[in-house]
Length: 424
Image (tube, rainbow, N blue to C red; front, top):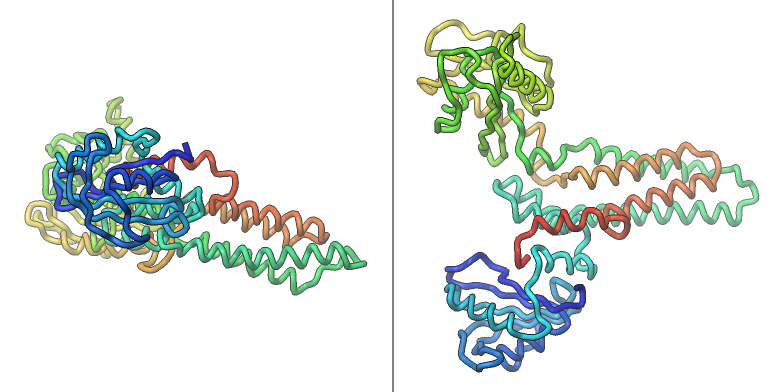
C-alpha cells in the first residue's frame, strides 16, 4: 500500500467557498495531467479546466498545484486541486479520480503517515499535528504547534549529538586505553549533566492535562450545593438538584475554558457513610475521583477536607448568611456571588498544572522513552567499567530512536494516525 497513489478531500466537507483535493504518490503527476492537462511548474499555481478522464466532460475551473517528491509535504509527488466548494463539484471530481485505474481513496491520516515514513517529519511532529487538529483552546493550539513545528525534534537531535559524542569517547577508551578500568572523570561528568537535563524535562508539566482538560472535582458532603454550583458555572441544568440527600449517584463532567485553559469540572456524590448500596457506589467513585483530581473544590467544613496539593475551599450558599471560613471563596449559585472569583482561583491553580505558554510539553509516550534514556544514562554514570558504560549509552540511544520513531514503534503508529481525519 505504500507504493499506491492515493487521493482525498483535504479540506472540510462542502459546501464551502474553496475545497482542496490532494493526490499523492508515484502516479500523482500522471493523474493530475489526465484531469487538468499539462501541469504547472513545481510549487506554482495555475488555473486549469478540470475534465473527466474518460468522458472529457468539464467538471470545474480550478487552481492546480504541483509538488515534486523531493520538496513535498509527504515526500512523494503531489497534485492539489483547489476547486469550487459546492457538493456537486467536489463529488464529481472525487468520482472522476476514483474512476482512474491505480488510484485509490486515502485512509484517515495516510498523507501524514507517508510524511513520517518518508522522513519529512518524525513521530513527535506527527503527534503534534494530531493534537493541533484536535485543539479546542488557544493553549492547546500553541502547545501542539510547538511539537508540530519540530521543537521537541530539535531538542532530541541536540541530545542525540551529545550522546553520540559520549559514546565515541567510550568506544575509543575501550579500543586504545591500556587501563580499561580508568574512566575519564570529565566523561562521567558529561554523562551526569545530560542525565540531569533529561530528569529536568521529566519534571515539567505534561501535555495530558492541557489536551484532556484539568480535572477539577467538586466534592463535599450531601446537600452542600455541589450540583447547584455546577449548574451555575456551566449556565445550564447539567445536574439534578433536590433537597433530598444523596441525589447525585454518579459523576457529571462539564467542559469549560478558563483563561484559554481547558477545564473539566466534575460533580460527585456527597461523601458520607450510607447503607444505600447504589449511593455507596457513587461515594466510592467520588473518593477515587478526589484522589486523582488535579484540583479539588471542597464545599464542606475545612476540617473535613481531604488532603490534596491543590485544595480550594469553597463556602457555598453565601446568600443564606454565615461567615466564610478563612481562606475560602464565598459563593452563591442563586445570586451568582463569588462565581467570578471562584473561576479566577481555579484558573490560577490550573496554570500550575499546565505547561508554560511557550514550553514544549511531553506526552506519556514521549516521557516514557526519555525516562528510559535517563535511566540508562544514570547507569552509565554509575558504572566503573568502560564496556558497561558503552552498553548503557547504547540503551539510551535506542530509547531516543523509539522516541523519534526510528525504531520499535509499530505498535503506536496505527493508533496515532487513526486520530487524523480523512485527507490529512
